[in-house]
Length: 167
Image (tube, rainbow, N blue to C red):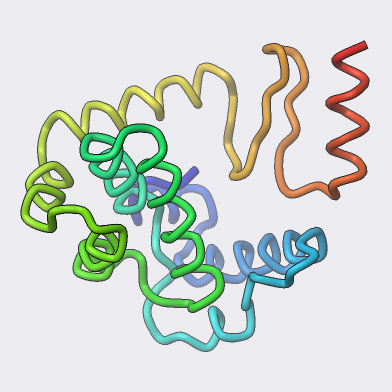
C-alpha cells in the first residue's frame, strides 16, 4: 500500500518500475473481472505518473464525514472507476474534488475535510491497522482474523474460501 512517491520508490526502486509492476497487477486482476472494467492499455498510455493512494484515501474519509459509510464506499467506487476504467489521474486533487460533486456532496466542505487534520488522522489510523494486520496489497480480504486473501481472486475461489470458513 503506497502512500507517497517516496513509499512507492522504496517498494519498487523507481516510479517507472512501480508503474510496470502495478500494471501487471491490474492485468492479472482484470482476468477475474467478468465486466473487464480495468483498462490497462489506456492506463499505461497516460502521461501522468502512476498515482499513489494517499489522495484517494483522504477523499474516501472526507466523503465518509459528509455521507457516512455509504458515502465512503460510493466515493471509493467512483474513484476506482475514474482510475481503472477512465484512466484519469486520481493523484490530481481537482479530479477528486469533482468526484465529490458528482455524488452531490458540498464541494467546499469536502475540500475543507479532505485537507483537514481529522481526515489525515483517520487515514493514518487505517494505515496503522493495515500494517498490524500485515495487509500490503489491495484488495485484501480478511476472514475471522485468520484467513488473508491478498490480491484479486476469482469469484469461485473467493466463494470456496468463505464457505470453508463458515463450516
